[in-house]
Image (cartoon, rainbow, N blue to C red; front, side, top):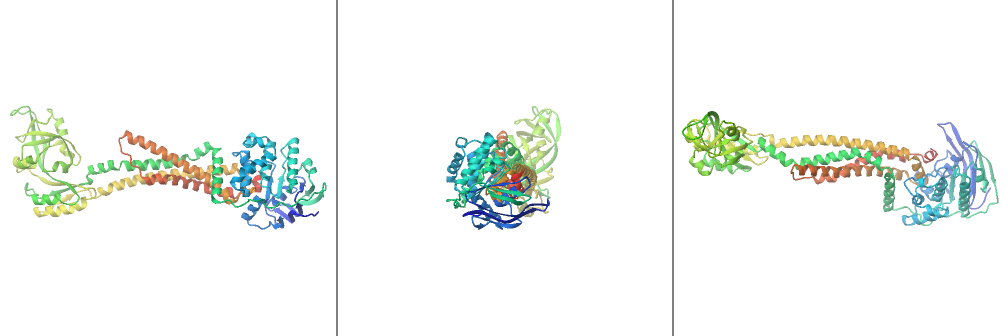
Length: 638
Protein backbone atom coordinates (compact mmCIF):
# COMPACT_ATOMS: atom_id res chain seq x y z
CA UNK A 1 0.00 0.00 0.00
CA UNK A 2 1.53 3.32 -1.08
CA UNK A 3 0.60 6.97 -0.96
CA UNK A 4 2.07 10.40 -0.83
CA UNK A 5 3.86 11.95 2.14
CA UNK A 6 5.26 8.91 3.98
CA UNK A 7 5.90 9.78 7.63
CA UNK A 8 7.76 6.64 8.59
CA UNK A 9 9.23 3.78 6.64
CA UNK A 10 10.63 0.54 8.04
CA UNK A 11 12.62 -1.82 5.83
CA UNK A 12 13.45 -5.40 6.84
CA UNK A 13 13.54 -4.67 10.56
CA UNK A 14 14.97 -7.41 12.74
CA UNK A 15 15.41 -7.49 16.51
CA UNK A 16 16.58 -10.34 18.69
CA UNK A 17 17.22 -10.67 22.40
CA UNK A 18 20.11 -13.09 22.58
CA UNK A 19 20.10 -13.35 26.36
CA UNK A 20 16.56 -14.67 26.27
CA UNK A 21 16.97 -16.55 22.96
CA UNK A 22 14.01 -14.65 21.46
CA UNK A 23 13.57 -13.32 17.93
CA UNK A 24 11.17 -10.42 18.52
CA UNK A 25 10.98 -9.13 14.92
CA UNK A 26 12.16 -10.51 11.59
CA UNK A 27 11.97 -8.90 8.15
CA UNK A 28 9.31 -6.33 9.01
CA UNK A 29 8.75 -3.68 6.33
CA UNK A 30 6.08 -1.01 6.67
CA UNK A 31 5.33 2.41 5.18
CA UNK A 32 2.90 4.69 7.01
CA UNK A 33 1.55 8.05 5.97
CA UNK A 34 0.26 11.28 7.40
CA UNK A 35 -3.36 10.99 8.57
CA UNK A 36 -3.30 7.20 8.88
CA UNK A 37 -4.40 5.32 11.98
CA UNK A 38 -2.53 2.02 11.81
CA UNK A 39 -3.61 -0.64 14.30
CA UNK A 40 -0.87 -3.18 15.04
CA UNK A 41 -2.48 -6.34 16.36
CA UNK A 42 -1.38 -9.82 17.33
CA UNK A 43 -1.16 -12.06 20.37
CA UNK A 44 1.14 -11.31 23.32
CA UNK A 45 4.76 -11.86 22.32
CA UNK A 46 4.09 -11.26 18.64
CA UNK A 47 6.39 -8.19 18.58
CA UNK A 48 3.93 -5.27 18.80
CA UNK A 49 5.74 -3.39 21.60
CA UNK A 50 9.15 -4.13 20.08
CA UNK A 51 7.98 -2.66 16.77
CA UNK A 52 6.73 0.51 18.47
CA UNK A 53 9.99 0.84 20.41
CA UNK A 54 11.96 0.65 17.16
CA UNK A 55 9.67 3.10 15.35
CA UNK A 56 9.87 5.46 18.34
CA UNK A 57 13.70 5.27 18.44
CA UNK A 58 13.60 3.84 21.96
CA UNK A 59 15.49 0.81 20.69
CA UNK A 60 17.75 0.06 17.77
CA UNK A 61 17.18 -2.74 15.24
CA UNK A 62 19.72 -5.49 14.67
CA UNK A 63 18.88 -5.41 10.97
CA UNK A 64 17.09 -3.04 8.61
CA UNK A 65 16.60 0.69 8.67
CA UNK A 66 14.02 3.33 9.54
CA UNK A 67 13.25 6.66 7.85
CA UNK A 68 11.28 9.41 9.58
CA UNK A 69 9.92 12.16 7.33
CA UNK A 70 12.30 11.08 4.60
CA UNK A 71 15.40 11.19 6.81
CA UNK A 72 17.30 8.14 7.96
CA UNK A 73 16.75 7.44 11.65
CA UNK A 74 19.00 4.38 11.80
CA UNK A 75 22.45 4.41 13.33
CA UNK A 76 21.99 7.84 14.89
CA UNK A 77 24.02 8.87 17.90
CA UNK A 78 21.99 8.73 21.06
CA UNK A 79 21.82 12.48 21.50
CA UNK A 80 20.61 13.00 17.93
CA UNK A 81 18.03 10.21 18.28
CA UNK A 82 16.81 11.73 21.55
CA UNK A 83 16.28 15.17 19.99
CA UNK A 84 14.52 13.66 16.96
CA UNK A 85 12.26 11.62 19.21
CA UNK A 86 11.43 14.63 21.38
CA UNK A 87 10.46 16.85 18.45
CA UNK A 88 8.84 14.43 16.01
CA UNK A 89 7.27 11.61 18.03
CA UNK A 90 4.56 11.46 20.69
CA UNK A 91 4.01 8.48 23.00
CA UNK A 92 0.94 7.17 24.78
CA UNK A 93 1.41 4.02 26.86
CA UNK A 94 -0.94 1.65 28.65
CA UNK A 95 -0.03 3.42 31.88
CA UNK A 96 -0.33 7.20 31.85
CA UNK A 97 3.10 7.63 33.44
CA UNK A 98 2.30 11.06 34.82
CA UNK A 99 4.86 12.58 37.19
CA UNK A 100 3.14 12.46 40.57
CA UNK A 101 4.51 15.74 41.92
CA UNK A 102 3.32 17.72 38.88
CA UNK A 103 -0.18 18.90 37.99
CA UNK A 104 -1.86 17.90 34.74
CA UNK A 105 -0.77 21.23 33.26
CA UNK A 106 2.83 20.70 34.36
CA UNK A 107 2.88 17.15 33.02
CA UNK A 108 1.79 18.31 29.59
CA UNK A 109 4.25 21.20 29.72
CA UNK A 110 6.98 18.65 30.45
CA UNK A 111 6.49 17.17 27.01
CA UNK A 112 6.67 20.62 25.45
CA UNK A 113 9.86 21.31 27.40
CA UNK A 114 11.71 18.30 25.99
CA UNK A 115 10.32 19.10 22.53
CA UNK A 116 12.19 22.41 22.67
CA UNK A 117 9.22 24.75 23.14
CA UNK A 118 10.31 27.94 24.99
CA UNK A 119 9.07 28.39 28.56
CA UNK A 120 6.96 31.40 27.69
CA UNK A 121 4.85 29.28 25.32
CA UNK A 122 4.54 26.06 27.31
CA UNK A 123 1.69 26.97 29.65
CA UNK A 124 -0.49 28.25 26.83
CA UNK A 125 0.29 25.20 24.69
CA UNK A 126 -0.41 22.82 27.58
CA UNK A 127 -3.76 24.49 28.30
CA UNK A 128 -4.82 24.17 24.65
CA UNK A 129 -3.83 20.49 24.63
CA UNK A 130 -5.76 19.75 27.84
CA UNK A 131 -8.80 21.64 26.60
CA UNK A 132 -8.74 19.56 23.42
CA UNK A 133 -9.18 16.36 25.47
CA UNK A 134 -11.87 17.79 27.75
CA UNK A 135 -9.73 18.54 30.80
CA UNK A 136 -9.97 22.33 30.85
CA UNK A 137 -11.35 22.24 34.40
CA UNK A 138 -8.72 19.76 35.67
CA UNK A 139 -5.49 21.48 34.64
CA UNK A 140 -4.28 22.04 38.20
CA UNK A 141 -5.22 18.59 39.51
CA UNK A 142 -2.46 16.20 40.55
CA UNK A 143 -2.41 12.72 38.96
CA UNK A 144 -3.74 11.13 42.16
CA UNK A 145 -6.77 13.41 41.92
CA UNK A 146 -7.61 12.28 38.36
CA UNK A 147 -9.59 9.21 37.32
CA UNK A 148 -7.88 6.57 35.15
CA UNK A 149 -9.61 7.96 32.06
CA UNK A 150 -8.59 11.51 32.90
CA UNK A 151 -5.01 10.46 33.49
CA UNK A 152 -4.86 8.76 30.11
CA UNK A 153 -6.34 11.79 28.38
CA UNK A 154 -3.71 13.97 30.12
CA UNK A 155 -1.05 11.59 28.80
CA UNK A 156 -2.56 11.90 25.31
CA UNK A 157 -2.50 15.70 25.60
CA UNK A 158 1.18 15.53 26.57
CA UNK A 159 1.96 13.33 23.56
CA UNK A 160 0.20 15.61 21.07
CA UNK A 161 0.75 19.10 22.54
CA UNK A 162 3.78 19.75 20.31
CA UNK A 163 1.87 18.51 17.22
CA UNK A 164 4.24 15.65 16.31
CA UNK A 165 4.06 14.03 12.87
CA UNK A 166 4.13 10.56 14.44
CA UNK A 167 2.05 9.35 17.41
CA UNK A 168 2.80 5.91 18.88
CA UNK A 169 0.23 4.38 21.23
CA UNK A 170 1.04 1.14 23.06
CA UNK A 171 -2.19 -0.43 24.41
CA UNK A 172 -3.56 3.03 25.26
CA UNK A 173 -7.00 1.68 26.25
CA UNK A 174 -5.79 -1.43 28.10
CA UNK A 175 -6.81 -0.03 31.51
CA UNK A 176 -9.93 1.87 30.38
CA UNK A 177 -13.62 1.03 30.42
CA UNK A 178 -15.76 1.16 27.27
CA UNK A 179 -16.76 4.81 27.66
CA UNK A 180 -13.22 6.05 28.16
CA UNK A 181 -12.03 3.80 25.32
CA UNK A 182 -14.56 5.47 23.04
CA UNK A 183 -13.46 8.94 24.18
CA UNK A 184 -9.77 8.21 23.64
CA UNK A 185 -10.45 6.64 20.24
CA UNK A 186 -12.17 9.86 19.26
CA UNK A 187 -9.09 11.86 20.24
CA UNK A 188 -6.89 9.50 18.20
CA UNK A 189 -9.10 10.09 15.15
CA UNK A 190 -8.95 13.84 15.76
CA UNK A 191 -5.14 13.74 15.85
CA UNK A 192 -5.07 11.80 12.58
CA UNK A 193 -7.44 14.36 11.09
CA UNK A 194 -4.80 17.05 11.60
CA UNK A 195 -2.19 15.07 9.65
CA UNK A 196 -0.57 13.00 12.40
CA UNK A 197 0.38 9.44 11.56
CA UNK A 198 -0.96 7.31 14.43
CA UNK A 199 0.33 3.81 15.13
CA UNK A 200 -1.64 1.92 17.80
CA UNK A 201 -0.57 -1.43 19.25
CA UNK A 202 -3.75 -2.96 20.65
CA UNK A 203 -5.65 -6.08 21.62
CA UNK A 204 -8.92 -4.18 21.63
CA UNK A 205 -11.05 -4.95 18.54
CA UNK A 206 -12.96 -1.71 19.07
CA UNK A 207 -9.78 0.29 18.63
CA UNK A 208 -8.61 -1.85 15.73
CA UNK A 209 -11.91 -1.51 13.90
CA UNK A 210 -11.71 2.28 14.18
CA UNK A 211 -8.30 2.30 12.47
CA UNK A 212 -7.81 3.04 8.77
CA UNK A 213 -5.43 0.10 8.50
CA UNK A 214 -4.64 -3.08 10.40
CA UNK A 215 -1.19 -4.68 10.53
CA UNK A 216 -1.20 -8.11 12.14
CA UNK A 217 1.95 -9.66 13.60
CA UNK A 218 2.69 -13.25 14.45
CA UNK A 219 6.02 -14.47 15.84
CA UNK A 220 7.68 -11.21 14.88
CA UNK A 221 6.52 -11.18 11.26
CA UNK A 222 3.82 -9.26 9.39
CA UNK A 223 1.09 -11.74 8.45
CA UNK A 224 -1.54 -9.21 7.37
CA UNK A 225 -1.58 -5.56 6.29
CA UNK A 226 -5.02 -4.40 5.11
CA UNK A 227 -6.95 -1.12 4.99
CA UNK A 228 -10.30 -0.93 6.79
CA UNK A 229 -11.64 2.09 4.94
CA UNK A 230 -10.73 4.46 2.16
CA UNK A 231 -7.78 6.59 3.23
CA UNK A 232 -8.00 10.35 2.95
CA UNK A 233 -4.33 11.29 2.52
CA UNK A 234 -2.98 14.21 4.46
CA UNK A 235 0.09 16.33 4.06
CA UNK A 236 2.93 15.31 6.35
CA UNK A 237 3.36 17.73 9.24
CA UNK A 238 6.30 20.13 9.05
CA UNK A 239 8.46 20.68 12.10
CA UNK A 240 6.69 22.84 14.67
CA UNK A 241 7.64 26.51 14.42
CA UNK A 242 9.38 27.88 17.46
CA UNK A 243 11.11 24.64 18.43
CA UNK A 244 14.68 25.37 19.46
CA UNK A 245 17.42 24.29 21.79
CA UNK A 246 16.76 25.92 25.19
CA UNK A 247 19.42 28.24 26.58
CA UNK A 248 21.34 27.69 29.79
CA UNK A 249 18.98 29.93 31.77
CA UNK A 250 15.91 27.97 30.69
CA UNK A 251 17.59 24.65 31.41
CA UNK A 252 18.52 25.81 34.91
CA UNK A 253 14.98 27.02 35.60
CA UNK A 254 13.56 23.71 34.38
CA UNK A 255 16.02 21.79 36.55
CA UNK A 256 15.10 23.87 39.62
CA UNK A 257 11.41 23.15 39.06
CA UNK A 258 12.08 19.43 38.74
CA UNK A 259 14.20 19.34 41.90
CA UNK A 260 11.62 21.31 43.85
CA UNK A 261 8.90 18.92 42.75
CA UNK A 262 11.00 15.80 43.34
CA UNK A 263 12.11 16.76 46.84
CA UNK A 264 8.84 18.44 47.75
CA UNK A 265 6.97 15.15 47.67
CA UNK A 266 9.49 13.42 49.98
CA UNK A 267 10.41 16.08 52.51
CA UNK A 268 10.53 13.60 55.40
CA UNK A 269 12.88 11.14 53.70
CA UNK A 270 15.03 14.00 52.40
CA UNK A 271 15.41 15.31 55.95
CA UNK A 272 16.43 11.90 57.29
CA UNK A 273 18.84 11.48 54.38
CA UNK A 274 20.62 14.70 55.32
CA UNK A 275 20.96 14.01 59.06
CA UNK A 276 24.56 12.79 58.86
CA UNK A 277 25.59 15.78 56.74
CA UNK A 278 23.76 18.07 59.17
CA UNK A 279 25.68 16.55 62.10
CA UNK A 280 29.01 16.62 60.29
CA UNK A 281 28.81 20.28 59.37
CA UNK A 282 27.36 21.13 62.77
CA UNK A 283 30.26 19.47 64.60
CA UNK A 284 32.77 21.19 62.32
CA UNK A 285 31.28 24.66 62.78
CA UNK A 286 30.73 24.31 66.52
CA UNK A 287 34.23 22.96 67.12
CA UNK A 288 35.85 25.60 64.93
CA UNK A 289 33.96 28.41 66.64
CA UNK A 290 34.74 26.98 70.08
CA UNK A 291 38.43 26.70 69.23
CA UNK A 292 38.62 30.28 67.93
CA UNK A 293 36.71 31.77 70.83
CA UNK A 294 38.61 30.00 73.57
CA UNK A 295 42.01 30.79 72.03
CA UNK A 296 42.49 33.74 74.39
CA UNK A 297 41.57 31.58 77.39
CA UNK A 298 43.96 28.88 76.24
CA UNK A 299 46.69 31.50 75.73
CA UNK A 300 46.22 32.72 79.28
CA UNK A 301 46.48 29.21 80.65
CA UNK A 302 49.69 28.60 78.75
CA UNK A 303 51.07 31.89 79.98
CA UNK A 304 50.43 30.71 83.52
CA UNK A 305 52.34 27.55 82.73
CA UNK A 306 55.39 29.61 81.91
CA UNK A 307 55.10 30.05 78.18
CA UNK A 308 56.14 33.70 78.61
CA UNK A 309 58.54 33.44 81.55
CA UNK A 310 62.34 33.22 81.58
CA UNK A 311 64.21 32.72 84.87
CA UNK A 312 67.97 33.15 85.03
CA UNK A 313 69.64 31.53 88.05
CA UNK A 314 72.76 33.29 89.29
CA UNK A 315 75.20 30.68 90.48
CA UNK A 316 77.15 33.05 92.69
CA UNK A 317 75.40 34.00 95.90
CA UNK A 318 76.51 37.60 96.32
CA UNK A 319 73.30 39.31 97.39
CA UNK A 320 73.97 42.70 95.83
CA UNK A 321 76.34 42.15 92.95
CA UNK A 322 74.17 39.57 91.18
CA UNK A 323 72.58 42.26 89.02
CA UNK A 324 73.82 45.83 88.99
CA UNK A 325 71.86 48.86 87.80
CA UNK A 326 73.43 48.76 84.33
CA UNK A 327 72.46 45.12 83.88
CA UNK A 328 68.87 45.83 84.96
CA UNK A 329 68.61 48.62 82.42
CA UNK A 330 69.89 46.29 79.69
CA UNK A 331 67.50 43.49 80.72
CA UNK A 332 64.46 45.77 80.72
CA UNK A 333 65.46 47.16 77.33
CA UNK A 334 65.58 43.73 75.65
CA UNK A 335 63.02 43.31 72.83
CA UNK A 336 60.15 41.13 74.04
CA UNK A 337 60.71 41.80 77.78
CA UNK A 338 57.61 43.13 79.55
CA UNK A 339 58.75 43.02 83.20
CA UNK A 340 62.06 42.18 84.89
CA UNK A 341 62.33 41.39 88.59
CA UNK A 342 64.52 39.65 91.18
CA UNK A 343 63.55 36.70 93.38
CA UNK A 344 65.84 35.66 96.24
CA UNK A 345 65.45 32.54 98.36
CA UNK A 346 66.26 33.35 102.01
CA UNK A 347 65.62 29.90 103.45
CA UNK A 348 63.27 28.68 106.18
CA UNK A 349 62.73 30.82 109.28
CA UNK A 350 60.59 30.84 112.38
CA UNK A 351 57.55 33.04 111.96
CA UNK A 352 55.36 34.00 114.90
CA UNK A 353 52.12 35.90 114.91
CA UNK A 354 51.88 38.63 117.55
CA UNK A 355 48.68 39.71 119.21
CA UNK A 356 50.61 42.54 120.88
CA UNK A 357 54.35 42.94 120.99
CA UNK A 358 56.58 41.83 122.58
CA UNK A 359 54.51 38.80 123.68
CA UNK A 360 54.31 36.31 120.75
CA UNK A 361 51.86 33.53 120.26
CA UNK A 362 52.49 30.28 118.41
CA UNK A 363 55.48 30.04 116.03
CA UNK A 364 55.93 28.17 112.70
CA UNK A 365 58.82 27.44 110.36
CA UNK A 366 58.09 28.75 106.86
CA UNK A 367 60.02 29.80 103.79
CA UNK A 368 61.03 33.40 103.31
CA UNK A 369 61.77 35.02 99.94
CA UNK A 370 62.79 38.46 98.84
CA UNK A 371 61.63 40.22 95.66
CA UNK A 372 63.11 43.22 93.94
CA UNK A 373 61.51 46.21 92.31
CA UNK A 374 59.07 45.15 89.53
CA UNK A 375 59.13 41.65 91.04
CA UNK A 376 55.38 41.59 91.74
CA UNK A 377 54.65 42.16 88.04
CA UNK A 378 57.37 39.85 86.77
CA UNK A 379 56.18 37.00 89.01
CA UNK A 380 52.53 37.64 88.16
CA UNK A 381 51.47 38.05 91.80
CA UNK A 382 47.97 39.17 92.72
CA UNK A 383 48.09 41.24 95.90
CA UNK A 384 45.23 42.08 98.23
CA UNK A 385 46.11 45.15 100.24
CA UNK A 386 49.31 47.14 99.63
CA UNK A 387 52.42 46.07 97.76
CA UNK A 388 56.01 47.28 98.08
CA UNK A 389 56.76 50.84 96.97
CA UNK A 390 59.95 52.06 95.31
CA UNK A 391 60.94 53.64 98.65
CA UNK A 392 60.47 50.29 100.40
CA UNK A 393 62.86 48.66 97.91
CA UNK A 394 65.45 51.42 98.27
CA UNK A 395 65.25 51.74 102.07
CA UNK A 396 64.74 48.09 102.91
CA UNK A 397 61.60 48.82 104.98
CA UNK A 398 60.67 46.09 107.45
CA UNK A 399 57.40 45.08 105.82
CA UNK A 400 56.13 41.80 104.38
CA UNK A 401 53.60 40.12 102.12
CA UNK A 402 52.11 36.84 103.33
CA UNK A 403 50.90 34.03 101.09
CA UNK A 404 47.17 33.45 101.34
CA UNK A 405 47.49 29.78 102.25
CA UNK A 406 49.90 30.60 105.09
CA UNK A 407 47.81 33.54 106.30
CA UNK A 408 44.66 31.47 106.65
CA UNK A 409 46.15 28.19 107.88
CA UNK A 410 47.67 29.45 111.11
CA UNK A 411 45.80 29.24 114.41
CA UNK A 412 45.97 33.02 114.54
CA UNK A 413 45.24 34.13 110.92
CA UNK A 414 47.48 36.86 109.62
CA UNK A 415 45.73 39.98 108.33
CA UNK A 416 47.01 43.10 106.62
CA UNK A 417 48.29 45.59 109.20
CA UNK A 418 49.24 42.96 111.74
CA UNK A 419 52.77 42.42 113.07
CA UNK A 420 54.75 39.22 112.72
CA UNK A 421 58.14 38.06 114.02
CA UNK A 422 60.53 36.47 111.49
CA UNK A 423 63.65 35.02 113.07
CA UNK A 424 63.22 37.46 115.92
CA UNK A 425 62.79 40.44 113.58
CA UNK A 426 59.55 42.39 113.69
CA UNK A 427 57.80 43.16 110.35
CA UNK A 428 54.47 44.67 109.48
CA UNK A 429 52.20 42.78 107.02
CA UNK A 430 51.03 45.16 104.28
CA UNK A 431 49.22 42.69 101.96
CA UNK A 432 48.28 39.13 101.08
CA UNK A 433 49.41 37.19 97.99
CA UNK A 434 46.17 35.75 96.59
CA UNK A 435 47.59 34.28 93.38
CA UNK A 436 51.10 33.26 92.35
CA UNK A 437 50.55 31.05 89.34
CA UNK A 438 54.21 30.98 88.23
CA UNK A 439 55.54 30.34 91.74
CA UNK A 440 52.74 28.75 93.72
CA UNK A 441 55.11 28.06 96.63
CA UNK A 442 54.91 31.79 97.51
CA UNK A 443 51.36 31.20 98.74
CA UNK A 444 52.95 29.32 101.66
CA UNK A 445 55.73 31.85 102.31
CA UNK A 446 56.49 35.30 103.62
CA UNK A 447 57.86 37.73 101.04
CA UNK A 448 59.97 40.81 101.89
CA UNK A 449 61.78 43.46 99.81
CA UNK A 450 65.25 42.31 98.66
CA UNK A 451 66.87 45.25 100.48
CA UNK A 452 65.10 44.27 103.74
CA UNK A 453 66.23 40.67 103.39
CA UNK A 454 69.81 41.75 102.76
CA UNK A 455 69.74 44.03 105.82
CA UNK A 456 67.98 41.65 108.20
CA UNK A 457 69.57 38.33 107.15
CA UNK A 458 72.79 39.08 105.30
CA UNK A 459 74.02 35.48 105.32
CA UNK A 460 70.73 33.72 104.49
CA UNK A 461 70.71 34.08 100.68
CA UNK A 462 70.74 30.64 99.05
CA UNK A 463 69.80 31.52 95.48
CA UNK A 464 68.99 34.50 93.30
CA UNK A 465 66.77 34.40 90.23
CA UNK A 466 66.18 37.07 87.65
CA UNK A 467 62.56 36.65 86.51
CA UNK A 468 61.67 38.04 83.07
CA UNK A 469 58.10 38.18 81.82
CA UNK A 470 58.12 38.25 78.00
CA UNK A 471 55.86 38.40 75.04
CA UNK A 472 54.62 35.14 73.50
CA UNK A 473 57.36 33.49 71.46
CA UNK A 474 60.17 35.62 72.93
CA UNK A 475 61.61 33.34 75.69
CA UNK A 476 64.32 31.57 73.61
CA UNK A 477 65.87 34.82 72.33
CA UNK A 478 65.45 36.68 75.65
CA UNK A 479 67.12 33.78 77.51
CA UNK A 480 70.24 33.97 75.34
CA UNK A 481 70.52 37.76 75.68
CA UNK A 482 69.88 37.69 79.45
CA UNK A 483 72.62 35.09 80.03
CA UNK A 484 75.09 37.22 78.07
CA UNK A 485 74.23 40.31 80.16
CA UNK A 486 74.29 38.59 83.55
CA UNK A 487 77.46 36.62 82.83
CA UNK A 488 79.39 39.88 83.07
CA UNK A 489 78.57 40.23 86.79
CA UNK A 490 78.73 36.55 87.75
CA UNK A 491 81.75 34.40 88.45
CA UNK A 492 80.05 31.51 86.72
CA UNK A 493 77.86 31.44 83.64
CA UNK A 494 74.20 31.80 84.73
CA UNK A 495 71.62 29.24 83.73
CA UNK A 496 68.37 30.15 81.99
CA UNK A 497 65.21 28.26 82.83
CA UNK A 498 62.23 28.44 80.48
CA UNK A 499 59.90 26.11 78.57
CA UNK A 500 61.17 26.31 74.98
CA UNK A 501 58.39 24.04 73.79
CA UNK A 502 55.66 26.11 75.44
CA UNK A 503 55.48 28.53 72.53
CA UNK A 504 54.53 25.60 70.29
CA UNK A 505 52.54 23.68 72.86
CA UNK A 506 49.32 25.57 72.24
CA UNK A 507 49.64 24.97 68.51
CA UNK A 508 50.29 21.29 69.15
CA UNK A 509 47.34 20.87 71.48
CA UNK A 510 44.91 22.79 69.28
CA UNK A 511 46.30 20.89 66.29
CA UNK A 512 45.42 17.61 67.95
CA UNK A 513 41.96 18.89 68.76
CA UNK A 514 41.54 20.09 65.18
CA UNK A 515 42.67 16.68 63.91
CA UNK A 516 40.13 14.93 66.12
CA UNK A 517 37.37 17.29 65.01
CA UNK A 518 38.39 16.78 61.39
CA UNK A 519 38.29 12.99 61.74
CA UNK A 520 34.85 13.10 63.35
CA UNK A 521 33.63 15.54 60.71
CA UNK A 522 34.99 13.51 57.80
CA UNK A 523 33.43 10.36 59.26
CA UNK A 524 30.05 12.03 59.61
CA UNK A 525 30.24 13.60 56.15
CA UNK A 526 31.27 10.25 54.64
CA UNK A 527 28.28 8.69 56.38
CA UNK A 528 26.19 11.51 54.95
CA UNK A 529 27.44 10.75 51.45
CA UNK A 530 26.58 7.06 51.90
CA UNK A 531 23.14 7.96 53.22
CA UNK A 532 22.48 10.27 50.29
CA UNK A 533 23.73 7.60 47.89
CA UNK A 534 21.40 5.01 49.42
CA UNK A 535 18.40 7.32 49.41
CA UNK A 536 19.06 8.50 45.86
CA UNK A 537 19.50 4.92 44.67
CA UNK A 538 16.16 4.05 46.25
CA UNK A 539 14.63 7.07 44.56
CA UNK A 540 15.99 5.94 41.20
CA UNK A 541 14.46 2.50 41.70
CA UNK A 542 11.04 3.85 42.65
CA UNK A 543 11.05 6.38 39.81
CA UNK A 544 12.07 4.05 37.03
CA UNK A 545 8.84 4.62 35.13
CA UNK A 546 9.24 8.40 35.46
CA UNK A 547 12.81 8.13 34.19
CA UNK A 548 11.66 5.94 31.31
CA UNK A 549 8.91 8.42 30.46
CA UNK A 550 11.28 11.39 30.53
CA UNK A 551 13.72 9.52 28.30
CA UNK A 552 10.93 8.52 25.91
CA UNK A 553 9.66 12.07 25.46
CA UNK A 554 13.12 13.52 24.93
CA UNK A 555 15.23 13.78 28.06
CA UNK A 556 18.89 13.02 27.43
CA UNK A 557 21.05 10.88 29.68
CA UNK A 558 22.83 14.03 30.84
CA UNK A 559 19.54 15.66 31.82
CA UNK A 560 18.49 12.61 33.84
CA UNK A 561 21.87 12.46 35.59
CA UNK A 562 21.72 16.20 36.26
CA UNK A 563 18.27 15.84 37.84
CA UNK A 564 19.41 13.29 40.42
CA UNK A 565 22.73 15.01 41.02
CA UNK A 566 20.88 18.27 41.62
CA UNK A 567 18.49 16.60 44.06
CA UNK A 568 21.29 14.99 46.05
CA UNK A 569 23.28 18.25 46.01
CA UNK A 570 20.31 20.20 47.34
CA UNK A 571 19.87 17.66 50.15
CA UNK A 572 23.56 17.94 51.09
CA UNK A 573 23.65 21.74 50.86
CA UNK A 574 20.42 22.31 52.78
CA UNK A 575 21.52 19.84 55.47
CA UNK A 576 24.83 21.70 55.75
CA UNK A 577 23.10 25.08 56.04
CA UNK A 578 20.77 23.76 58.73
CA UNK A 579 23.75 22.26 60.56
CA UNK A 580 25.55 25.59 60.27
CA UNK A 581 22.59 27.54 61.66
CA UNK A 582 21.98 25.12 64.56
CA UNK A 583 25.70 24.98 65.44
CA UNK A 584 25.98 28.78 65.46
CA UNK A 585 22.87 29.10 67.59
CA UNK A 586 24.11 26.52 70.08
CA UNK A 587 27.53 28.11 70.21
CA UNK A 588 26.10 31.56 70.89
CA UNK A 589 24.15 30.08 73.80
CA UNK A 590 27.32 28.44 75.18
CA UNK A 591 29.33 31.65 74.67
CA UNK A 592 26.73 33.74 76.46
CA UNK A 593 26.55 31.30 79.36
CA UNK A 594 30.33 31.40 79.76
CA UNK A 595 30.64 35.15 79.11
CA UNK A 596 32.91 34.60 76.11
CA UNK A 597 33.27 36.92 73.16
CA UNK A 598 32.30 34.78 70.13
CA UNK A 599 35.01 34.51 67.46
CA UNK A 600 34.02 32.62 64.31
CA UNK A 601 36.27 32.00 61.34
CA UNK A 602 34.62 33.31 58.17
CA UNK A 603 36.29 30.55 56.17
CA UNK A 604 34.34 27.95 58.14
CA UNK A 605 31.08 29.74 57.37
CA UNK A 606 31.92 29.78 53.66
CA UNK A 607 33.19 26.20 53.51
CA UNK A 608 30.22 24.62 55.33
CA UNK A 609 27.69 24.81 52.46
CA UNK A 610 30.46 23.90 50.03
CA UNK A 611 31.15 20.78 52.09
CA UNK A 612 27.44 19.92 51.99
CA UNK A 613 27.38 20.43 48.23
CA UNK A 614 30.38 18.16 47.75
CA UNK A 615 28.84 15.49 49.98
CA UNK A 616 25.65 15.66 47.92
CA UNK A 617 27.55 15.43 44.65
CA UNK A 618 29.62 12.53 45.93
CA UNK A 619 26.59 10.69 47.27
CA UNK A 620 24.54 11.28 44.14
CA UNK A 621 27.20 10.50 41.53
CA UNK A 622 26.69 6.74 41.29
CA UNK A 623 22.85 6.78 41.52
CA UNK A 624 22.76 9.55 38.89
CA UNK A 625 24.87 7.43 36.60
CA UNK A 626 22.57 4.46 37.18
CA UNK A 627 19.51 6.59 36.44
CA UNK A 628 21.05 7.87 33.21
CA UNK A 629 21.78 4.31 32.05
CA UNK A 630 18.18 3.08 32.46
CA UNK A 631 16.71 1.69 29.24
CA UNK A 632 13.47 3.64 28.69
CA UNK A 633 11.77 0.79 26.82
CA UNK A 634 12.35 -1.63 29.70
CA UNK A 635 11.52 0.94 32.35
CA UNK A 636 8.15 1.66 30.76
CA UNK A 637 7.26 -2.04 30.68
CA UNK A 638 7.87 -2.51 34.45
